[in-house]
Length: 382
Image 1 (cartoon, rainbow, N blue to C red):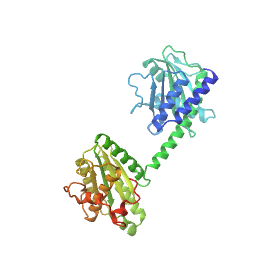
Image 2: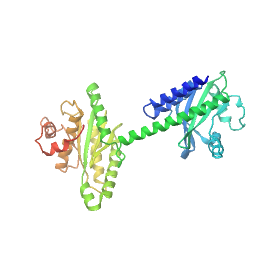
Image 3: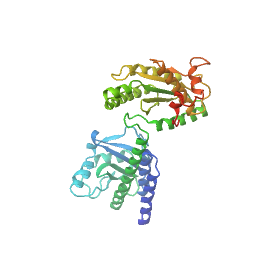
Image 4: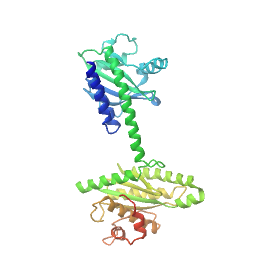
């Protein structure tokens, strides 16, 4: 490959990673770009999980052998099977050298490689019908992050020293792309995560609820919302301090997450202050009410606080048409408000008291200016 073609390949790899949305897309773009740039038939990107002593494969692209999935869940290899990782990334690099790629072949050690370090890779090449590979360490923020692996099929020209040098350059470009993807991923996580509890925040809940209602309108998928208000937080803050109040919020967040796990795919979120919610898309209304009932029970067992006021609204219950996220939220919040007013120990469910259900009437009524219900909904984006 000429210099111009190699420069174009580097640019293509960088652009592919820059256009990726999320880590998985970035990993795939990196592997695909490197595979094309090096004229390979297969490529993989792996991360070094130091605490587990293993290389875990993140993505496989190209001509995959039997058992090689594009995004494997559990494909990993003990580092002791590949001791060159430790040598190249610690002994040689720490001694003043730079991490660089190397070549392995199905016939044994490539030129300039010491025998004894390649048997696992040689065996893997033969087992999967590949003739050679180039392995490039990926270094991120001054530390070994993992490796880029590109192979060619049996019978194709063997990688040369120039290819290994080029793979080293590609690994550096790839590392910059991964760093950018991780920064963006962290920014997205922070934008949609409540810092105190680690649950989703209101922005995430709003977005997911909007998507869920669109799906409900399209195909009738059941959407249910549990809105809850943690009782006694103000008293705890006033008498024991905000640090203790924060601990109560964290513990309740854990309880909410635990109960949310009863509903596959449910989103547990803190809306702000002492208000939380569970959003379930798919499970039946009765399953959601059962989870909400468990939430109320567990909340009363917390060492701090005074239980929780819990309201439920589901498109499967007789609450009338739900054409917007705002209406479902108003229904769940009105049910929660009634649970709070009645000091109910169980969830109040909108629509289950017949055609004249007071919760539905409260949610659908246009409240007078300054009324409690208007104050509760003002400023809510849902």
